[in-house]
Image (cartoon, each protein chain N blue to C red):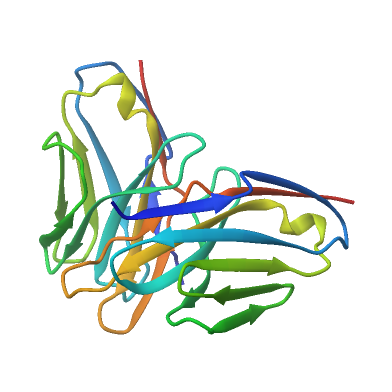
Length: 113
Length: 112
């Protein structure tokens, strides 16, 4: 049973560029959350998707957007990259109404130069 | 503002030397408190969920407890493989609150 898979594992971009990160949830899970983890910090909530809708958003600008597909996979898009966007981006999945336990992927390490 | 504070930031133990990690929280209404373990280069791995004051959960050498203001993660006779960053997170009560608010974590190093 595959867990949460994220791609790519590492990414290097320059300021002003756009990036798309991808996530496949654990088999059977229908809810996907995205978190940003800066070095030495705890993960910070970006948003959560359920039934292809964003149902809660954290304190992140509109440059951060997402999507959930009918197969429950998800994408995180970041436009107009800033140096401060350099971080580990984590995807977590769960099963709505069954368990609050989040299963995290290994993340995508984004470096903005 | 809702806050989660973990202490100490870093802890170095000898193998077999028991200790506790602390997570204090200031929130308007707690739905649940979560403990995760994170190894370098990996995503957090779920350990425990606690919902009410007085609740305790155990797993191998780890035991988590919860009061109205804080949670402790007790590590009994740790081994080098217990070395990791331990993260505490809270979820607020309320129908539309789904996010977890994390602390900065405690970096635990267990020396053989």
